[in-house]
Image (tube, rainbow, N blue to C red):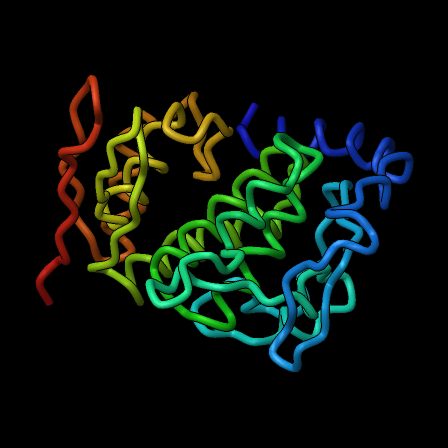
Length: 243
């Protein structure tokens, strides 16, 4: 049985429970000043979706600079200022602080997609694209929707195609380190343990070797990957194929 068919079986159970969860989580508290949008509107509280069924607002939502997520009526962040970190305004609420307010796990997966897709639409960057891809990956792991699987791969590829030299920063034990996102994308696809989610690569274990299949997919995209090594998996190398 292919990985894709297994995911479709799991999807039905989540869809059956989603209506019981929808709309139960409220971010913030009414009466407390929250982040504002570009027009100065205060978002005191927003209701986050907790189901895992995502209808794409347009074909390219969550890909590079596509803006349609800002017109999606299901997007809870449309009227929220999703800010990048600004050294001149270090106390402003940033996208990372908003992300930390979202429930962990499946309950927050859809909200995470909308947050990062909104950040990407307003400020196209490799960091925002990678987090959008991760959110789509998490949603697909929960819902098994083939459309979301394909969009997940497109979002990961967009990091390579549109933001190849981008980095993001991680903090471990008080120390901050940077990570090349082209290598992070390749590791996310090559090593499922990197994300904790099922692989979005469509492969058949009866005929394929998974790692070889991932490398072939990257080659089809125009890249070569030298896999990272344990224990830190931080030395992978991605290069652009000539021609």
